[in-house]
Length: 399
Image (cartoon, rainbow, N blue to C red):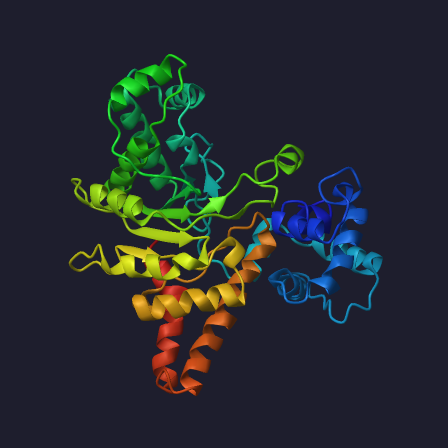
């Protein structure tokens, strides 16, 4: 259960924190020591100023769907809405909130070393977040040794221990891995990888990111996990806000365009392996890369396996009507629209599942407008079939 609407709706959501900072709200009311009502009051007061930003639409939808409270028009006081939402919240658990969105399968991120007993292996399963594996440290290796009962003295030991945990994740219902390839990531064939790993064990600095990412991709292919690569975040902006709010504080930015040569070299190297490429979903934070990533869906084909590599939905700063529409425009002409896997949700708020409804509205409007202009057939049965695939079936087929 949640202590207040602030705890559920505002505290864990860096999207909202960013908007409040843009509007000049003092940090005290964002991540500081103000009480829950004071923080809610400041955020509620921001909403009329957010027209045009998806946060406005999401807020209205979240309150209507989850709390059955109409925010529009903003005539009710912050205190009135706060108390009404808190009263409703007393009847809601996390499972009841998820049920409102009719979720069949959800996969929050978990580290390789996390406890998997919290997952029910049915509707709530882990998605493997692999960043700490790629950026391996002696501390991570020590934790992996303890968890798997494996002494790690070389890269083969490390690979076996990692695979043990990947198998455990799969048994817990995991079907997806997730890696952040931030702005500036470059794939290179590692030279002297074993030597670098031994240096790491001695506490020396060593970069094995390319070698480990390739190893993981091969393991994902072996065990049937889809690999998600989120490309292009510029996470280092304000060092002041980093100290104040932590890495997920809502101040990251859109980075450079993708290094296509590096990305395709990586995919090519994995494809040459014993198990080939895993199902791979490419997300770009830079909208200039939409056409680039969409075309890659035709570069790594395999008999009887549709969309070995595909582009994921508009992500993060592109998670709005314009971003989604631009992504869909490019994907439709450079790939095959009916293979699109639909929406994802990357917010840390349970209420953010409303974004799937938001996406469905955008997607259906996209199809309708195309049909109305004569660009797509004005055939409801045909378009409905595409909508069902892209909003539901294609994602389900990945599970």
